[in-house]
Length: 252
Image (cartoon, rainbow, N blue to C red; front, top):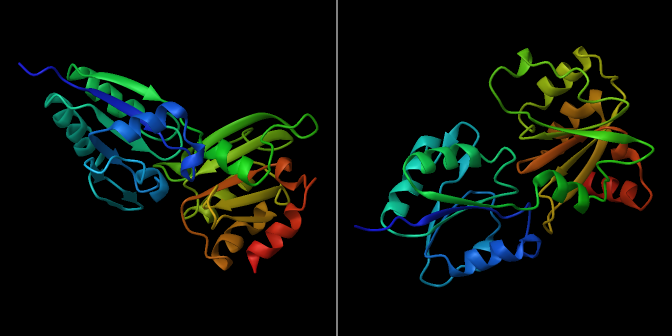
């Protein structure tokens, strides 16, 4: 009887390979099979050994290469063959990465699972844009929300953003108008500063600044595309370096 392999749920970070943890890099370099998201940078996949099998399960809005349940079954099927499987995800597998769902199904099938955390998209994007998510003078609370989810308009976001708080929105490009409308309807001032960070920690990164009321127009006018993160709060307006100029250049 074949002994099942292990499924490693690995975070690749938000950008290029130098943000990988050492453990993630070692697993990628030695993996026989890597099942990866579309957000994993090419420089990271290039670390795989020449004979590694690379399987893309890239997801885009309203179109999945494989539905999530089929991805789960793919991981299980390969592990039951006795293969160790590296499931490679952009950012961190436990923050909007569906790592929990994949782990639950794998464990139910009797397969061992290990999590290898990565630099989250929020931390990586903020660092690349030199935005401190917390600051003694501006924010002591950080919240993460998904901007692309069922029942967005019915959720209660009151208190997630505002004075002393930072709100980080994943997957919010397509729903920027609804996000701005919802936050203002829930009591957030229209002139709260925002930042949109596109292609964080990559050479093509753009940092765009504006105000909450103008968020939809900013995203539309600058033709922002995923991957992009939206940060809302006073921390985005603390320009102790030349990021104001960076934002202007990115917007041109």
